[in-house]
Image (cartoon, rainbow, N blue to C red; front, side, top):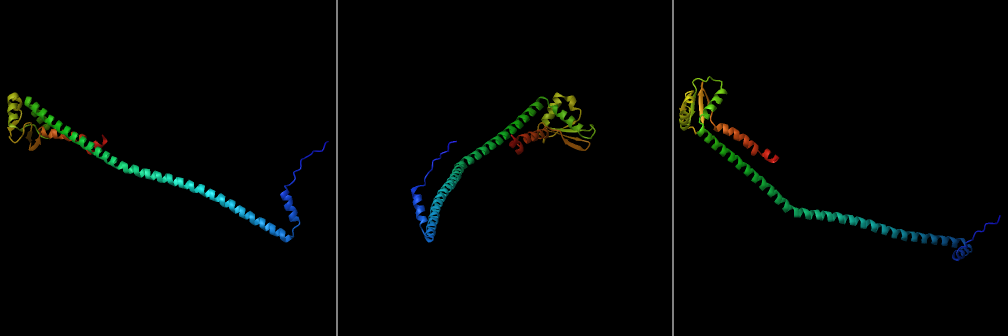
Length: 224
């Protein structure tokens, strides 16, 4: 086999010179050289560490500064937005209140109109068919625990006259008594010591109470 040849690298001349100088030095000189090298290594390590620490510190400080700057920018933007939004929020609240007031007033007008129309319809119906009052009397007596004999029915004089003209046979069923204190469409009856209101007003009021409860009740308004 042929021998394997490897290239040999000679050390730098500076190292050879330093080695020859150290070889010829005394122990005291060697110790001085080692101490000097140690101090130079410490100084170089300090400088490199200081420079590296300053660079890392600057990067960390810059990162913290950027984050704080972004956070401060967000806070300032939110404060400016809140300042600009206050008048808008106040205007929206005022508009909502105006809308609520308008809707409440509109509902009340509708309720009042329904009541007026109902009264006119009742008045017109009683004018054409006054015997409807006697039907109300029948209904009221049916709900009272009394006998149907000896019943006195108090009516507005004009209503009584129309009933006697249009249905004289019905007018003889009970004792009809004119009462000028009663408005047209109102009727009061006495039976067996009991008194009851058989007129249209209390029936209309009961009906309108239900309408108002549906239209004007605050809970119903908020749900709509």
